[in-house]
Length: 363
Image 1: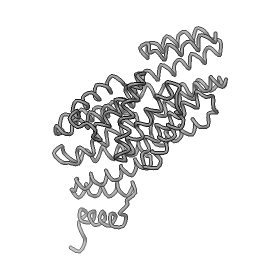
Image 2: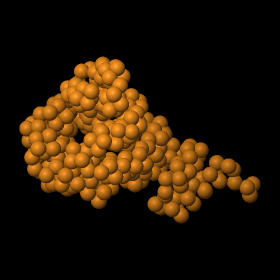
Image 3: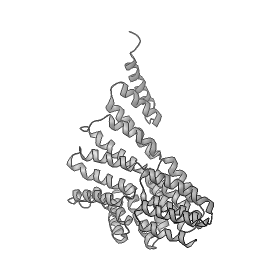
Image 4: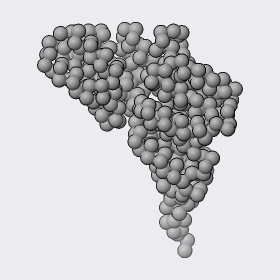
């Protein structure tokens, strides 16, 4: 027959797509992957989807990368080398977009199948995912497991990455001295290897230590994280740097434009954990600037996201912001009810209890 079969036509079309667009955009890459799947070339489909997902990540379209990586992972089995690479990427993107439970489930699936020498990297990725959601106990557990597996390779990049996430756990728990020691040690190795992701991770921790202790120049340190992320195609670090920089705008009573711009950037990227934190900043900034009608809308947005993403401390803090709005309105009964709710949601977290004093001081 002079008319090719549909399967053969799909192969020709996919090959034409790949030849004509060696730098396939996301849509072209997904179409080529679909055609490869139809042709029974599932390994090639997985490769094309992984490439498209990487491009999406580099340009900050994090939420677009998730379904591509999920499909790619389904096309390969545990015995294939691509399975680990795709799974690790999927775990990371899920965590950044706020799907932390799904990320940790991917990690558990990987731990059940990977080779012994890969387990440290999986525990590291799971620690990073838990830290994204401020789940410090879970993050610390996985960081310790990773550390136990890299003890015989001190000074390695993997060991430095474990130190970096251990530093993030320490700063999240208010152990600033431990955090900075770990971060500065890891930063030396990052500089030596020119590992930009590790440079950003350690600088972020150092900036948080500077802010927490009221020392140094945290604004410049957070700006360096933003710059590293922007210049080296690491959008998740750029967004986290912007979030921490925005916290200083809140503390220093700056206008809201910077936080709003950071929020738009994070929302476009699908980085919902960052969006939730920035909405919380906007609620408290509205209180600080006496724009009391703007407290509740921002706090409600934060609460909705924090509930969805299982961020109980952040949800508690934003609920206190609602109590502050009630206090501004002179509604002491509603304020008391919201403060009790915030305490229950957060498990009596110290930050929530301390911020409750702001609402009580307004009545």
